[in-house]
Length: 146
Image (cartoon, rainbow, N blue to C red; front, side):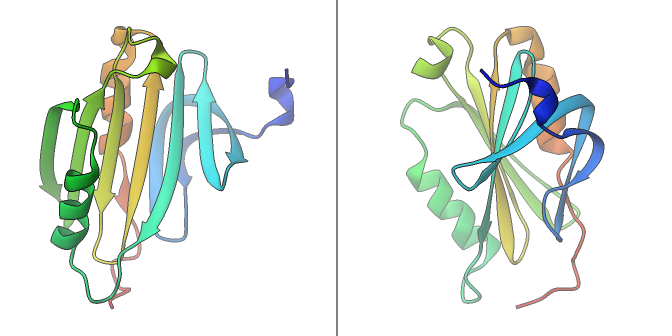
């Protein structure tokens, strides 16, 4: 077991990359694991992955691929657009949560890349906070075009 003090503490608006930020509603710990950023606090863990969109593809091409690859048992599927970004999310009951609380998978697509968040909560009461985190994603480099 690691001492939580050996991991950086992050909060507020946090840069995930040169193009993406996330807003964290409280203090979290962070580390890199398996090439992904892991952000966590007691009861809530976020796995963050960043993917490029091929210059010949559109946002819609990328989201179509994600929809085709999502788990068959996904539910509570939701898609919105805001500030030129497409937000797509769903929930899924998983073994990692002992099938007791559904995880939230959130994808946010810009014109050049997308963020994938896997958010695992220990209590259904934290679901609203997971959605708040999903919706906080911001693309800060809109000038970069293919």
